[in-house]
Amino acid sequence: MRIGLTGATGFVGRAVLKLAHQRGHEVIAFTRSPERPIEWASEQREFSLDALPNLSGCEAMIHLAGEPILGLWTPEKRRKIVQSRVEGTRRVVEAIAKLEANPEVFVCASAIGWYGDAGETELTESSPRGLGFLADTCAAWEHEAKQAATERIVCARTAVVLGRGSGAIKVMKPIFKAGLGGIIGSGQQWMSWIHLEDHARLLLYAVENMDIRGPLNASAPWPVRHSDFVKTLARALHRPALFHVPAFAVKLLLRGLSAELLDSKRVLPQVALDHGFGFKYPELEPALRDLLN
Image (cartoon, rainbow, N blue to C red):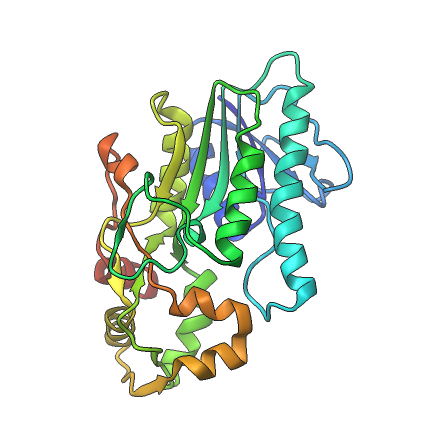
């Protein structure tokens, strides 16, 4: 299958590109710098918010491009987060509408921010939208995706992605190795996560499985409380985790981004499980051992 992939040079995009290549798919990588060779890509094309991408020949489309959420959420940062997701998705959908032969499936990234702070509630794909900036952003993002003129549309609501050398692990590992790791807030908030390998596998599973459509929680089946995540990570790195950062300090330092650390999201990948997807890393400790050793 010829798969178009935006965000192909990003943390998740590279993993999807490599796995798709290994499975025998041809991948057209969309990037802001198409002149730079991309390993495993059969072709490179330009992707920007200023023009419609050339999607000709794409039998499936995976859209991952978007402004990273890490960093202080200044008004400008918030604008970029929303614009990159909403307008970027709109460009892809508009490009699909102009094709004579449309892709069979459009898999668009989304996030578990859709659910907001849900406390102890178990969240599946049928759970209602929450409140807040991320929930509103995800709602606008998914609304654009749903306009795609494809037989199937999948919105992959992604949890915290754990992978080597980038993402959350890249941020946390040096802090914990220095013995400065610790619990943020009460520690009782639920944290949903997914191993990068499982995330890439699930995105391709959504492309290849004709029965999957609609929202798809891209999260491991065993979410953990934040305090348990901290203890497990510290144990894997053979370091103590003695510090405690109160919620008010996190809100003061990180502003809107603090919601990503303090909100409780107990997300279950019900659709993936119902369709028989097998997680290679369903539990946190084996996932961290794989990533850190």
